[in-house]
Amino acid sequence: MTEPAFFILTALVGAPRHGYGIVAEVRELSQDRVRLKVGTLYGVLERLVVDGLVAPDREEVQQGRLRRYYRLTDEGGRALAAEAERQAANADIASRRLRALRPASAGGTA
Image 1: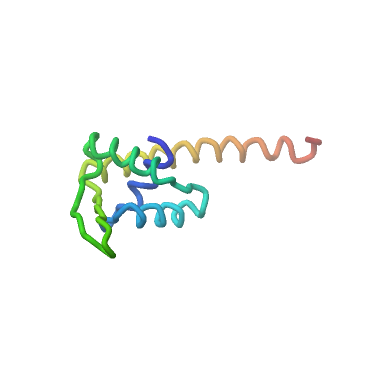
Image 2: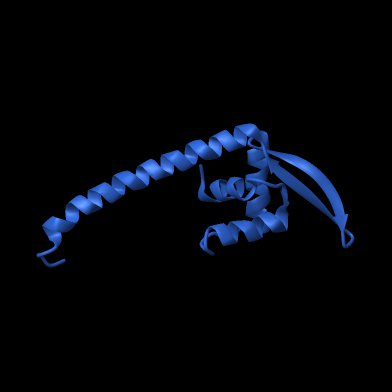
């Protein structure tokens, strides 16, 4: 799962959002590391819809513009949970290896 897809799914946990709301939430969740452009957002959303991880929720007209809201599906929630577990396991492996390396390299020069 790509980082943008991971954060888009995460942004949709708990409530449907429209495009701009997803972009803003992803930026906040990623601590400004992931900045989605509109083309990227809708390309990833389209793939997530085709994969059944996200579904259109509703459309509303606000300030003369049509806003389409998307929601996380049950399958999307399961996929996000699995990806979060995978990432946590990978981070744990790297952290353990780094902890094991520190005592050996503490006295040496880098």
